[in-house]
Length: 523
Image (tube, rainbow, N blue to C red; front, top):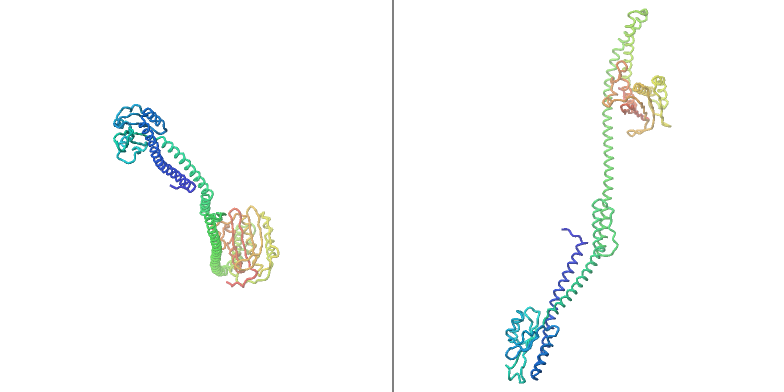
């Protein structure tokens, strides 16, 4: 069972005071009884001796009536319970108990009680004529009395007996009551002292110990700023100051540890960011290499195929156009021949795109103004945007530096991306072109942003939009070479192109072009 100092110390003090009170009562009672017995023996001896002398004088003067009066007067004493006088034959002559007069002394003894009679019988065998009863509550005095005017030494048998029995119970009762009162006072004083000590323990010890325990609990919960802050210069105060010193050291150690953890966490976060950036750049580089290799292979294939089919296609288109001009209007062959002419023209355009795609090699660059190039490109699609109910908006950065690039090819990029954006807004919308300065991969450059409010590009095909011949348009409306051509041009300029799209909200293309770039290797 756990008992706190607040209650344990006062309880111990109270128990201690009660024990001391009981010990005081017992020891005082024993000491008082000893004193009462000693005083009673002395007083009984003195009183009985005086009465002995008085009675012997009266008997020798033959004043028996006066002797009777003295016996009766002795019975009026405060503590005298019984006195009697016998003659030399053991007959009771006078007694404070009238019933005993005339009886033999030996017959009276049993009536005096089991604690008194044995003592009276033993007195003649003991030098002292005054004895305590067996229970210690009475004093018995047995003195010889000369019964005639003769020398006692000559007539030792001519003597009677004077018996006096003194009761000590009342004296001892009064003494015991007095001792009990004193013991209660003593215990009360000790109890008050215990309460004072308890208050002292509470205000000067227990309360401060509890404060240390409380602050320890706060420390355990993470409140490292908690302090005891004792001001008294005593043992508990010294303990409190030592505790505060330890707490301050722990607080500083905790702060230093937290600082190191924060610094290490920041270093790890930065290292993680660098690692992620390196992995991302590596993946982009690998993707760019794969894309370049793919584009190179496709370019070579497209160039060879284009050259092989360009001449036969020219023959087909030439004969078709010649026949169309010669047949009369409304002829049955007019519609088939015009269809041949239209499809041949579309194939020729496709072949031209393939040739253009295959010939992107060494490009001629010159210092150019990006804003002028964009304005020139937008002027080419402005009429188409009005027809499609598309609003053109610009957000050009002020004082944008010039870059080293091929203006015609970049114009082709802008027109291509803007045309695709308008195709993605069949019900109209907003096409926004913005520019800003940017640093990417340690290079300073320009970023062009082209954003529409169209249908968006599904995530599952977003990684394939720059692949040659990949298109989501209906058959006959796209060759799938537009974005591939855009990607190849930007790569040849040492730049980067990325796409962000939200379904139902629109698409944003981001083009980064460095201020200057090393010449690109030809395919």
